[in-house]
Length: 369
Ligand code: CUA
Image: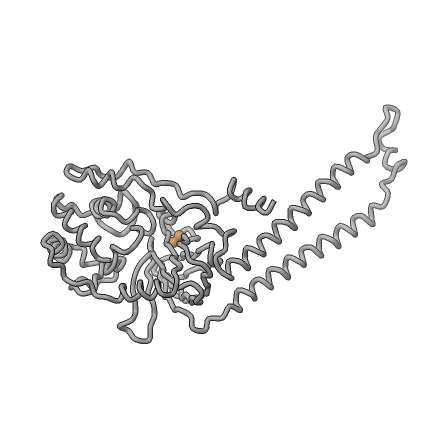
């Protein structure tokens, strides 16, 4: 019984629906790159199980408040619906029946409906009272959401781009700031204060397991707070139509035990060393001598552009292209070779490297952990 609502949503609604595996037919199986196509067969969502993008599976106080409100509304509306149906059936059952000899215009006068005034007044009062309960519950939920303490919060700046998420972890000490993309790591139990910006059009930041939605509006700054009370990877999704790749504007929130978070943060602050391995060194050289550097930053190199995602630690991320691809060598090569086939309309141009060059380039990028 506990989860009639969950069952209904699972059956019909969005939150439980698996993310469709994207059509892979268009991925290049170029000569010498057969490993590319085979490695991209699995959707980026594979292996994360059920309920990782689910407003009814709250992992923190903010989502729990919203979940409670949702449950109250569902049960109240279901009960009202059932009562209205019952009243309707009762009315049909008890309706005056005409006999063959009853004149139609006499019927109403002969058998006036009993107590109609009282019934209408009662129904009006009950409806108003129930709506009032929902208003109070909504306001209470809003206040509860705003009340969450943000003392000692982790501050993260989120900038939405068509179609990816730029993330900067603020720190008073600039050398401790972290810039990454599409994958938010947070320590379990610590409040997170997210400051939201949009680079181009309106987007919406939504991690159903952790909090409600908040729009990101160009030229404006907004904030929201959440806290993860259990470890896990939760999927976030842009929730405001923002162009043709809106559906592939996803991100992950990885809630980690505090010690693991500190280890992750420390690794992200490291500058990747120049590789001694010849293959990786060649990949790095190819990257730095191609147009990649016009859009991307890699710490410790001459690539310092901010147009596209920061790649300093791209190899440590779970997905590529804002959740569109799993992060592995084959997917990365497919993406570099023809990003427009995978996510048409995005700003990344195609790069036709020779197979050996591609292998070196991808090996180096994947080594950036
Ligand atoms: Cu960004 Cu939809």
